[in-house]
Length: 298
Image (cartoon, rainbow, N blue to C red; front, top):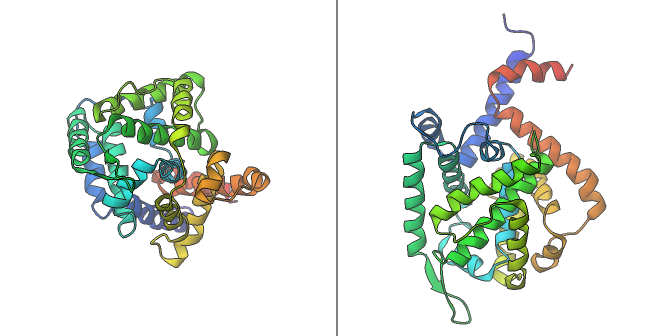
């Protein structure tokens, strides 16, 4: 017999989980999920290894937003996004494609992962253009790929350490960076960082190239202030954005016109971010955890 109240918990979990999954994975996400997780065959990464723990955790919602904000600071990367991406009119479609790539390369079969990498490399070859000063750019440029990769890995790792269910120890963090480097090499990154210390050095080396351009500030304002979401979803989204901004480096705030509220970020924002990621984790968790969730409310 279903315990009293458990049905309501399941219904709430299923509704919220479905809404989140639809936004992140897209309308055909269920088909891709079955293929990614259900198809037999060798994988690039062992289940339970650091990359599967990081990329499978709800903290990725915060890490993903931080990565988007941080990546805008490289003028060439931002110009490529501005010229070729659908972030203004198809923000969720772009998010679904990115999350699918991460899911396939992290959890999918080796064959599917190879195909996903080949598809992304083909897209990068077509993304070319010119900066406002006449300098050409190309998404396939290894230097530009290195920035995008480093900003993502740092963001995912920091978010997991703050909001993940089980933060990684030092050895696991180094393993995570090394595992992410395996995918980066296949995408065309030359000599990606393989330890947390190397990752920090790469990020520091990029610092002189970074600045807040008008295109960057437009993109940030779009992500922060104009999400294509129904009214009911905007408050939870605002919490995730605030949590992501709270993890941005201090020097990045002024160029992107982001607030700097250190006390609030360490207290109120951190508490709200923890609650939000815990809710997401619960909403997208297996049904067997429903009883535990119900018991915790009593």
